[in-house]
Length: 41
Image 1 (cartoon, rainbow, N blue to C red):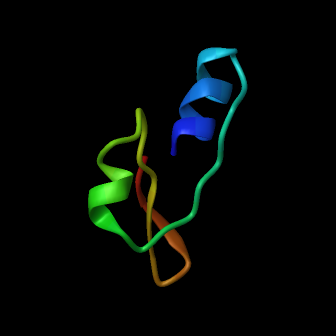
Image 2 (tube, rainbow, N blue to C red):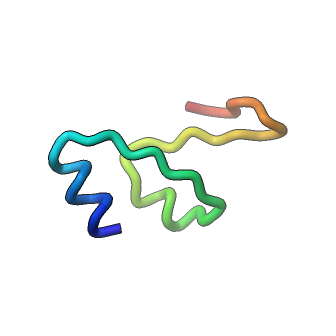
């Protein structure tokens, strides 16, 4: 996560896919999928 945070701080876009809700909640933006469709963005 430290490397991702450093890259994000440099203006890089990071796309992370995870099932770990705790990890996702530490991010700036969360897009949730349900049954292959965007549930919220």
